[in-house]
Length: 138
Image (tube, rainbow, N blue to C red; front, side):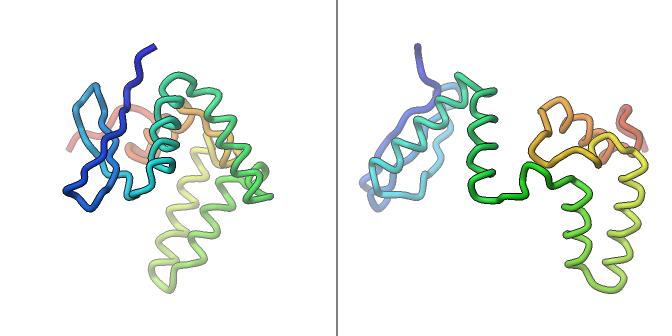
C-alpha cells in the first residue's frame, strides 16, 4: 500500500525534518531535528489516512488518559467555561450567543468527544447560517 506522506530532511534549514504530501506536493515543517520523532509523526499521518475510525478511538483513549472528565463533559460545559473568561460587554455578548446556540440543540447536550464528522458538519452549518440550512445570501 502506498503512503500519502513522506519524510524529508533539509540540512540547509538547520537540519529540520519536513512532511511532504505526495498528493499535493505541499511540504510542512515538523519542527524537529530528531529523526525518530519526525518518523512517528509521519507514521501517524499515514495511519490516519488508512484507518480514520480507529484513530478517533485512539484519540479518545489519549484524551481519557489526560483528562478524566473528557468522556462526560458536554458542549454546554465548554461554552460556559469560555463565557466565564470574558468580561463585561463581551461576557454578555457570549452569553447571548450561547443562549441562541442552545435553541438549536443539535450538539449542545452531546459529550465533546462524541462529535462525529457528520455531526460537526451539522453544527458548523448551524453556526454559519443560524438555521442549519443553506448559507444566507446578502
